[in-house]
Length: 65
Image 1 (cartoon, one colour):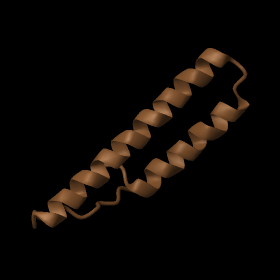
Image 2 (cartoon, one colour):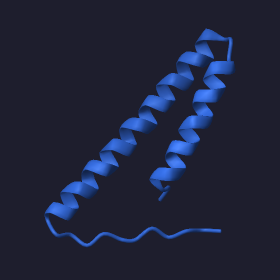
Image 3 (cartoon, rainbow, N blue to C red):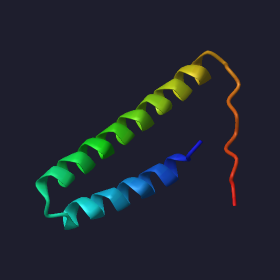
Image 4 (cartoon, rainbow, N blue to C red):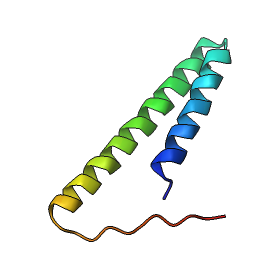
């Protein structure tokens, strides 16, 4: 699973591409994609919060090199 830090780094890259893009259609597509990624990240955060509240064990992050 991608870490939150990595997710926000990728979102920053997408935002940079959006600023440089002149095509309105591509810009709208990228904005919709970044919104979806942000929402999925929020859903994951909410799930982890619920799991902690219900004392469900959470798997630690595994860093891949």
